[in-house]
Image 1 (cartoon, chains in turn yellow, blue):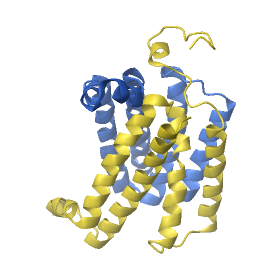
Image 2 (tube, rainbow over the protein chains, first blue to last red; image 1 turned 45 degrees about the horizontal axis):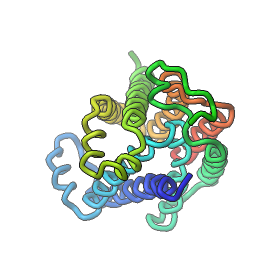
Image 3 (cartoon, helix red, strand yellow; image 1 turned 180 degrees about the vertical axis):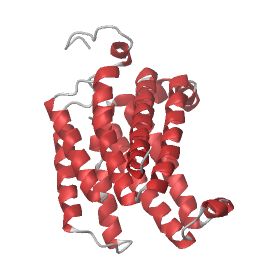
Image 4 (cartoon, chains in turn cyan, purple; image 1 turned 180 degrees about the horizontal axis):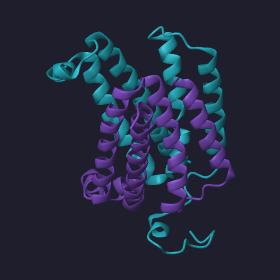
Length: 141
Length: 127
C-alpha cells in the first residue's frame, strides 16, 4: 500500500473523528433541541463548531469514497475503526469526559481487530467479479 | 407491539439501511475504479463526473439517509447508550456478511475475526 492510499485512510480516520468531536462540542453549547424547536437546527448549522464539524464530515465522506475505490468494504471499515480510539482519547483529554475501564477494554479489542485486518490484503474483489464474471486467476494482473 | 419491539425493530431498521447504504456505495466505488488513477489519467473534472454520475452511489446515499431517520426514531424509543453501540456493532457484522455474498469480497478468517473484535470493541466503547 503506497503513501497516497495510507494518507486517504488516515483522512477517513482523522476527518471522521475530528468532525464528530466538533459536532458534539457545538451541539453541547447549542443545548438539547425538541421537535417543536426544529428551526433552531438551522441556526445551529451556522455556529462555528457545528459548521466546522459539517465541513470536516464532508471531507470525511470524500476520503471514505476514495478509500472504497481502491480497497474492500470489509477492509476499510475495520481499518478506520481507529477513529473510535481517537474519539475516546479526545473525549478524555479535550472534552474532559470520564473514560471507564470498559471503554479502555473496548479500545483494546478495536486495536486488535484493526491489527488483524491491516495485516491482510486491502482488495480481494473487483467490480468485474461483482457483475458475475469469474475473478481472474491469481498472478495474472 | 411493546416498547421492546419498537426499540429493537428500529435498531434492526438502522442496521439494514446502513448496511445497504455501505454496500451500495462500496459497489459504486468499485465500479468507478481507483479515483487516484482516474485523477492521474483524466484530471479532476472527469473523475468527479465518473463518481457522481453513478446511480448506484445515489441509491446508497438514499439508504444512508433512511438509516439516519431510522436512527432518530430509535433514539426516540431508547437511550443513545443502547442505540449507538448496538446499531454500530451489528452494522459491522451485517457488512461483513453482505460484502462476502453480494460484493464477493474474500472475507477470510482474519477478516471475520477483525469484524467481530471491532464490533465487540465498539459496543464497549460506545456504551
